[in-house]
Image (cartoon, rainbow, N blue to C red; front, top):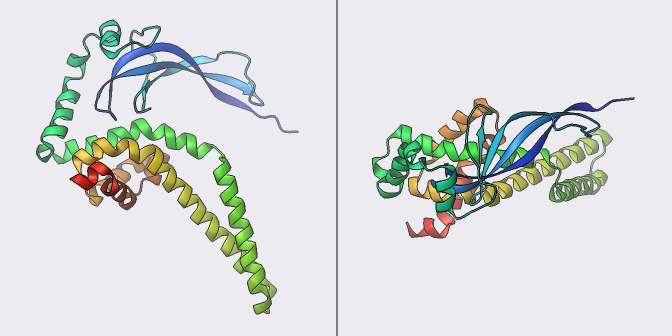
Length: 255
């Protein structure tokens, strides 16, 4: 008998705060959630567990910002207009993020003056704050994934059955069937990942990346920088697909 046990993440809402968003490049309303790690047996936990930190989730783009427990902040009990939320939770925000505000204005108004280091920083930061989307997608078994996997298996088996009468050796038939199934599975997984990145990630990156107009080499360098983090968003980022997405967007077509 196997006993499934370990740690699971539990989330508890704590209110709202005004904070700088590295994806929107503006002050935004954020939902604050306290993160606990609790022991579980068969995924059932009987306690809140121990607090490990907080996440701030942007109410405009969905980006998540992580805060350690030792980082103090004040929250409002309910969502309010941004100016009221700033006054209550973060009245000194423009002083705290003055460097980010200045860099954001430079990106929007004088992008040609951005240094290579500033460009790389602007390309990387949104990916860090959107990385949880890819991690969540990678750990979920979706209906689309199941259906495409089943379709790949059926089509691969069909190819093997059609070629079977033309090949004398049964091992060749088995090999061709296996290669067909694996090849179709790879294509379906790649298609689903690219579709997810277009809908959930590239669409959120668009405002910043259109302002910067990155080259393919810069995006490849961004992937290389992300590689040691082992984040799925770095593995799934496709430079040519992203540039094509930007070029086909309405704003991209006007530039």
